[in-house]
Length: 327
Figure 1: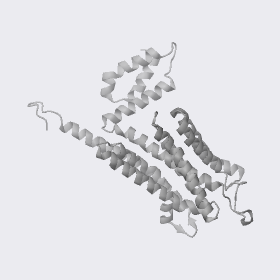
Figure 2: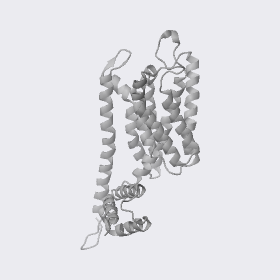
Figure 3: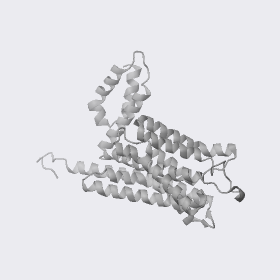
Figure 4: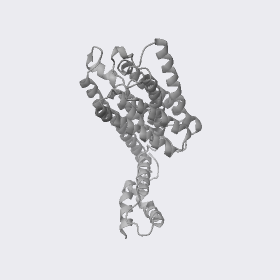
């Protein structure tokens, strides 16, 4: 056995034991035949493909194969939500307070966050017109810009959006990376159309009010509302698909609990420690930690319960060894 074959066999541990026994030799043989002469390590693409296939087979063995399709559905809704938020905040950036008010601003914009929202709007455009691989790269770039904004703002001593505005965008973007490979045209256009609608609506409301853009006053009520709407859309979609026996919507709804909860962090913080004119940092930090633990825990618990029920059903359906009757 060569070293390369040994390493492929180690990666094959990602698959269930029964699947390895029946198909393991065939899978490893295929990868060895396609490997370049003299190669000692599996390529990153091969390793990712094996791990992805192993996860898919384990989910199928646990009876939760539709989880992957549900996550992809949740990724679409997350990308649409992230695009809406980018449209709203991007339009908000165009309306700084008058100079005489001495409110912090960055040139003609409210803050340095305009860079981030431009990146997300470009990601929405890439999703609409570019292949899925390019769209994911654009989303990843927008994510990096969002993560880099706080240290960049500190280094430049520039005003930036609050963390409770940036953090939900990161969570939505991470989930959006799971967009399907070949989405339909309507799906590809949905984030861009949502962003354009959000920009137009924000411009209309700001112009109607005659005010200026502000994160602190807008986000405290706006973000929880968006989170609630995201769950409502997910619930309606789950019920509609469940009528036809499709469980994708249910998995999408459970997956969306985490980003929706991050959008509700300002409201949760306000409920924990309300102060005049905003929310205390301690309350926001407590809410964020609670949400970061509770959301993934609910998803994991749902997977374990579903897997346990599937296992019990399989055991109950086994025929009796004596009379061959099924229980």
